Length: 193
Length: 201
Image 1 (cartoon, helix red, strand yellow):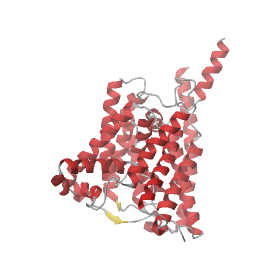
Image 2 (cartoon, rainbow over the protein chains, first blue to last red):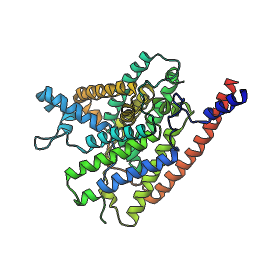
Image 3 (cartoon, rainbow over the protein chains, first blue to last red):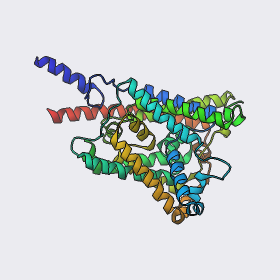
Image 4 (cartoon, one colour):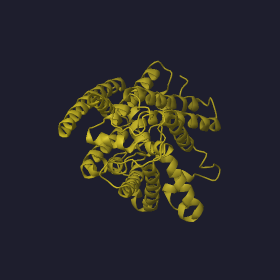
C-alpha cells in the first residue's frame, strides 16, 4: 500500500506544474510541439494576411467605440479613440482583430472542452485568499492594458508577431516584459507559490 | 511573388474577417493546449519552476521566423508587404516594463486571458475587466501623454536593418539564442525540481 502511494505521488510529481483535481483532465501538450503549432498559425497569418496576431487591439476598439457612443464629442477630440473608431464610412467593429479575438475564445473553449479542462475556478497559489487574488487580477489587467497601449501592442502583437519579423521595438518590448516580470516576481510570490 | 495573399487582393475584406475568425480559433487552441489558460502555469515562468512560456513563445517565434524567411528566399512571400509596427523606443521600453509587472500581478497577458475566460477562470474575467479599465484610463490620459507616446520615433526598423546585418545572419543568431534559452530552461527546471524536492524531504 505504501509503495502504491509512492508510485502515485511520484507519477503526479513528474506531471508538469498543475495539480490534478480531476483525474479525467488531460495533461497539457509538449511545449515545443505547441510552440511549432503556434508558430505555424502565426506564419499562416503572415502569408495569408500579411500581418501577425493580436489580442489587446480588440478591447481597445471596444473601449473606443463605447466612449464614442456615450460621449461623441469627447472621443472626437482624442487621437487615441479616433484611431480605433475611424471615419463614418466603415464600421469599426467589423475589424480583423475583433474577429480573431472571438476566434480565440471559441478555440480556447473547444480545446478545453475536448481535454476536459473547462472548469469554473480561480487560479491562485495556496497562500492567498480568493478575494486578494481577484484584486490583483484587476490591478494586473489594468497595468497590462495601459502598458500594452503605450507600447503599441501586447505579448501577441509585439513580442510574438513582431519578434518573428525581427522588429527592433518588438524585441525591446519583449526583453522589458521579462525584466519587469522578474523584477516584480519576488513581491508577488505569496500569490503564486 | 504571390503572398501575402490579402495584399495581392486574392480576397476582399469580408472574407478576411472569416479568415481572422479561423486563425483566431487555431490561436486559441494552441494557447489552451500549451496550458496558457491557467495563471498558475503562466506565473511559474517567473519563479523558474515551469518554463513553458519561454519554450512555447521562442519555439513559435523561431518557427514563424524560419518559415517566413524561407518563403521569402524562394520568392513566395514579399517580406516588404508584411506589416511592421513602427518603433518608438522609449514608450515601448516603458510599456514593456509596465506590461511585465502587470503580467506577474495579474497572472495573464491579454491573449491568454481570453483563453482563461473561455475555460471558466473567474480571475481571468476580473483581469479582462481590469484591462478594459486600463485601456480606458490610457485613453483618457492620452492628450497629456501623446507627446511621450510619439517620442523616440525610429520608423519601421528591424534588427537586421538597424545593426546593418544580413537578415539571414540575424535569423541564425535568433535560432542559436533560442536553443541556448531552451537548454538553460531545461537545466533550470531540473535544478528547481531538485531544490523543492529537498525542501519537502
